Length: 316
Image: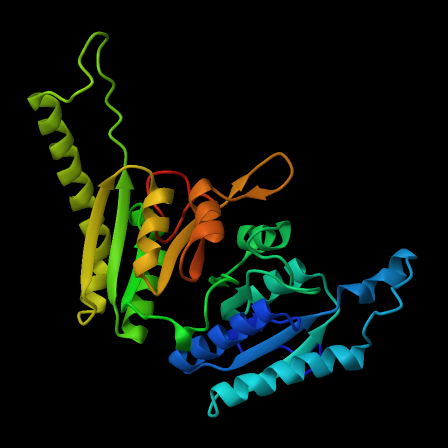
């Protein structure tokens, strides 16, 4: 398959560059495609191909198109060995990594990337490439941290963790339920909230009985709201066991801590426009840098017309 051949819609796409981190992403992508019963597209980016158009000279060590295709096909062969019945196609594209991955996300059911790379698909978690992809992805994006072992070597917890803000994030809630069903796992929805009542001047810092009662009342209301956001999906997925955890505190810290006992964390991304480009919120940033399991980012349309679920009442 060449750079101009469109892959099947709804498939799993993964970016590779020959690095160990890309190998981890490839192994995860093969597992995800197998779980979904979907084809896998393996893509290697060749950003240097555009250099002559700018008048710049490619470096002497620049791989040829044949080398790029061979790298992609080698990765595809590895995927076929990992999942013998899986349909796998390979492609080399003349694009910069973020552009290629974002383009793939428009027609893929899931795009998978590793946390670091060597060339076409580099530096996802700790650099601008990954943040650009997460900020602009058109569909679900699975980020696999480079310091994680392959899925086959991990201790699986049988848990999908969902960062839940409210009903506006229905897309992410639905995907989290589907992930839990496919993995035969339970779904833990973590809803973080912050008690914002300010004590009057001179009031003791230790909560009085009325203050404790008010905190308990808010906690019950927040828990009920989170339960209500899950209820429509419980009807559609009656076999998925669910648990709601409503915690008073910051979403980012709570989700990172809970990710240690999860197989994947699902979080909605609410894009915000800065002066120059799209920006991600602090919850997504924190998860991409510190989560202890793969992170499944689900984009929510600007304005949240029909959106998913997120990581709590902090802006995700």
